[in-house]
Length: 447
Image 1 (cartoon, rainbow, N blue to C red):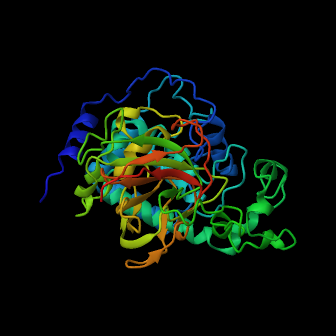
Image 2 (cartoon, one colour; image 1 turned 30 degrees about the vertical axis):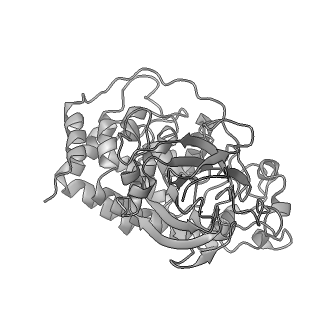
């Protein structure tokens, strides 16, 4: 049996950690720390608020749905997982500010309460809130636990992630059903077509295919609403005839731009450097990108969740990579909106979709696009096939059910001039429209 030394090292940390791992108070958050969560304390409060009466009492026992009951059995019948899911809540410090979750509600203190809350979530669709958070109630429940040594180990466990995938896929069945449309209403505060929502999305009707005259604006389900399409002409393709210009693959805000990226690096440390062999899950094409460039950007929960090709070219390979859903970097500590401060880290660990494209422009050649789910985003759907030719701006796939991040990966021979629309990359950046110019190939790049 193959030895997982990283996992064993995490277990050693868990066993060495005191049951109450006191930490310094968390710092104040910048005003817009990552649009996928908008990463402020109100976002997590709105997520909990959507659970309604379950908070009184929050841990009140109700019959568990089969998929949640399976999770309970997995935790209780596996000695390692029983230890980790017990310790992750014990290791949340019993002092301010950790006596409450990041928004002032009593913190979850054991896995049984966690299961009860998850059980109720699976038959609810996310209501609107004015932070931009779309459907992260499970993330809110687990937020502090994700920052503990035990949580770090538990949420990297393959059996845990296989069961979480089943749970999130079960929720997805509801979110694809007509019953999920009840939140697509005109309630002033919580409805997706109410006063507050339309103030946050002032050009919704102009931007997206919808019909206000129809019930639910014509959407068949919550997921149909979430994966909505832009109207023709609302997001033109940057220089469609110029194959030197690279288009934005998602409606997204710049997070990080890294050059001379290593084949293998310590992606788990504080700076979260990219490690190509792990990002691309050991794909045989990976060595071609050693020393190259990675551009990462995150998506806004309120806008658009489909992917588009950054270049014209041939689809060489597609892969859906199994991974984590709630793992965060141990070096990030207690993140008030986890895994917001672990976005570099999760490109190596989270469930994700990988597409290799051989660009028509030989100065670009082979490139990779990585679409990474975050927390409740359980589904990355690829809609192109290997061997297909796509034009710049053509659809590649989509995210379902929440926020997310993505990365473009270029070989070292590609000489690029990036255009981040007058802003540095980081958690305070703003969306660049999908299919807009984000980079141009300089003349003279090698093949």
